[in-house]
Amino acid sequence: MTALRAAREDSPDVLDAVFLELELAQEELRVMREEVTEQSQEVSRHSDAVDRERTLLRAVFGELPVPVFVLDDGGFIRRANGAAAELLGTSTAYMAGKPFPVFVDLAARPPSGHSCRPSCAAQARWPSAQWSWPPGDGCGHA
Image 1 (cartoon, one colour):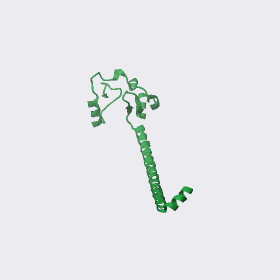
Image 2: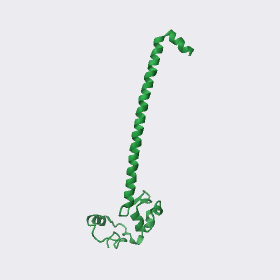
Image 3: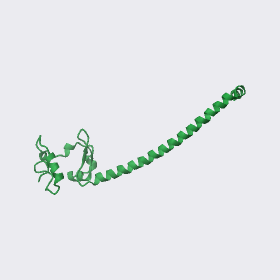
């Protein structure tokens, strides 16, 4: 304290300039705190919207009428919907984390080198055609 009084008596202009700088810095910090608070509230609102969207997408995925499996690069089931579980006669929780080939009947698989893409495309174009599982020819034809 004594040093401030001595500095004020020796050079009052310098001390006034220091106080002015401190007031300006305080005002800048106040403005920045308001901006950070506003940004934080916006992030929170955005996060809520993302959570609602995620919940909706999970519900849609779970209720899709067609079997859907989500596999990782190693062929392990990460997610499966209810139709997939029903198709395999198990639960989605049981399938999660297991290798997909465990659930595939090797006898029903198409021969090596055979592609199911044309049949899948045909199913998309003509959904009223008779398709069954397990497939008669390995690709869904009855």
